[in-house]
Length: 441
Image 1 (cartoon, rainbow, N blue to C red):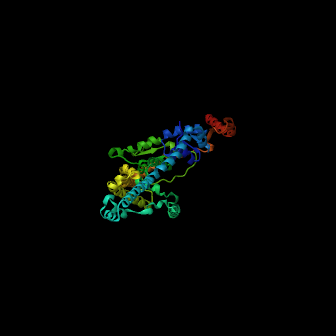
Image 2 (cartoon, rainbow, N blue to C red):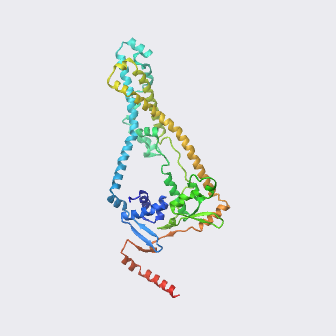
Image 3 (tube, helix red, strand yellow):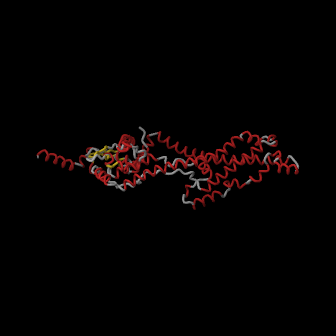
């Protein structure tokens, strides 16, 4: 069984000495998955087992357990290698769209310049003047002065741009997180991914923390601010939405004399050390989608270059229909053969962000509606009425925290069993004496 990265991370965060309940509460994992996963990780990494007199088990991991596993599992080494390679590949993919944009603009305007130069050198001044006024064989020359931006179009190749970028990063509150221009082009077209990609992971972590903070006993109203789709009618009244929580954390429903249901989670009541309440948000809040993580200047520049690209492609298209372009070969012939690719790229460069912008508005309206519902449940919990207060009080009866300290251990695999018996001889004699007194009475 391959080690679970989530369990490995939880073990590190908890200080390498954990119970199943600790890992479940930290990572929000399913109890039925966490227990065998933790046992497999302990076996593979050479961890020690500490067994309390109550039968509860604490796993004590070596601090270099990742190194032990890395040497043991070729799969982990290959995965780490691929992650590094993919990081480089994805960076190249991101900047490729900016490079293609620059190459497209360069091809378009260089081709236009070649056609203009050829048309100008093939006739006299008067014919050139007429051609300039009426379009002539150049097929669009009159538009060229208006759309010609010269070398400033490629300002991002300026040797001093790196210094300019560093000055912007110093003054920017985001510091080194600022994108370079080529990355910003990708961000402008496709965005920067789902801001709620780890929402489910965060949901279960928050629920586990709420249960742990309430010492393993909660009501449905305490969990509802972190859930969606609570159902309607009888389904909601009978709290069917709590079933996935019970299944994941091995919980048990308890019914009060008044008929209220509370939920008891014994696995989350056992811990390897005394722990204070962990901070947790009042409700699960989804983050709104952003059009782009690039700054406004980079977005405007990307959009501006996209407009230059599509307008240049349209001008070039009209010029390629002229007699001069038809007689030319070389670069002009090559650009003519891929003209529809250039035009298609230029159109998609502006169409995709436009469609994405309206999609984001619709998506964010849904996110805000879900956040509003969760917030209302959190407000209801904070302003608990008399019935809910009684329900919370009943749940508190099942609250407990079982801390397994070194004094509670019956034995541990860290040392030989005989050495442990000698070290604990006084404790063993005391236990035998207590049992004899009980039998005698």
